[in-house]
Image 1 (cartoon, rainbow, N blue to C red):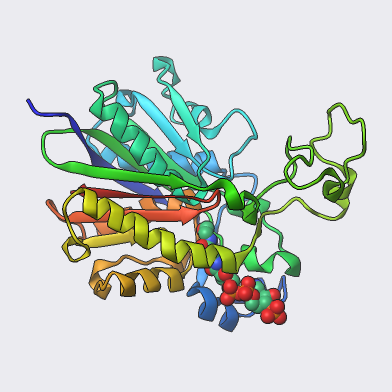
Image 2: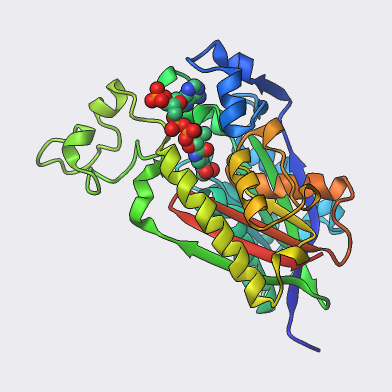
Length: 351
Ligand code: UT7
C-alpha cells in the first residue's frame, strides 16, 4: 500500500435565518448600500439569534450534516479541530463545547482549537491532513464557525469592519483515501502587521506591543487588568482593520500561495476546476481571478449573500458548490485564504 492520503469525505454548512441587508445597516451607522456594494460586493449577510445561537451551536449544525454526508456516525469522530475568531468563551475553546453539543464526549476524543482567523479552515485542513497521513486518526471533524454579530461595533466608527462580516458555520469530515485526495497544503504567516487587523481588547497584553498609555494602563499594575477603564469608556473593545493595507497585501499573497501549491504539484492555474477563495471582498476575488486568468465558472463567490464569515467561509462555499454539482469526482479544487495575523495558505486537492 502506498503512502496514506486524506480526503474530504463530507461537507456541511449552516447559515442562520436572519438576513441583514445593507439597508438595515444604513439605519444603524453612516453607511450606504451603494458604498458597501461598490467596495465589497456584499448585498446582505446573516446574523445568528443572540442568546440562542452561538459559534458552537452553529458549528454543531454544520458538523451534523458533514458527518451524515461522510456516511459515518458522530461517535466515529476521533479528533475535533475547531477554527474561529469569535469563540463562545475566551477559554475553554469551542472544540470541547462542540463535543458536548454533539453529545460525543463519552469517547473522550481530543479537541483542538485554532486561532488563525480567515485562514483558520486552511490551517485546520493542513493539520488534519498530517494526522490522517500519520495514521493516527481516521475520522477528523474540522469546523469553522463565527458568530461575529455579537462582537461588532454598530456605531459609525466601526463601519469599515462591521459591514463586511456575517455569521455562519461550515464543517468537513476528513478521512484516509487510496486515491489522490489532498495533494498539498501551503501555510504562511508574518506577524509584522499583527495589529492591523485585530481584536485586541480585552486581553492580557498589558500594553506591551503598542504602549501601555494607549490602553490606559498605569505604572505598577500587577494584574487583574484585563479591561481598563479607558478601554471601556472609549469603546476600544471591537475589531479594527487597516483595510487598504490588508487589501494590498491580500491580493499579492493570495496569488503567491495558490501558485506555490500548484507548482509543488506540477500543475498550473489553468488546471484548476474550481478555485474557492476566502470571501473577504469580491474585488479581491476578482483581482485574483484576473491575475490567474481563470474563467467565471472556475471561481466560486458567495460573499454577495453572506459577507465575510472568516473561518466558516471556505467550508460554506465548498458545501454550496458541492450541492450545486460544481464539484465532481476527480476535479482539481484549490482553496486559499488570507487574513489577520497576517496568516495565509492554500490547499490543493483532487475530489
Ligand atoms: O477577511 C480578512 C481580510 N480582510 C480583507 O481582506 C479586507 C480588505 N480590505 C477591504 O476589503 C477594504 O479595504 C474595505 C472594504 C475594508 C474598505 O474599502 P476601501 O476602498 O479600502 O476604503 P477605505 O478604508 O480606504 O475608506 C475610504 C472611505 C473613507 O472615507 P474618507 O476618509 O475617504 O472620507 C472611509 O471612512 O470610505 C469610508 N468608509 C465607509 N463609508 C461608508 C469606510 N467604511 C465605510 C462604510 N460606509 N461602511
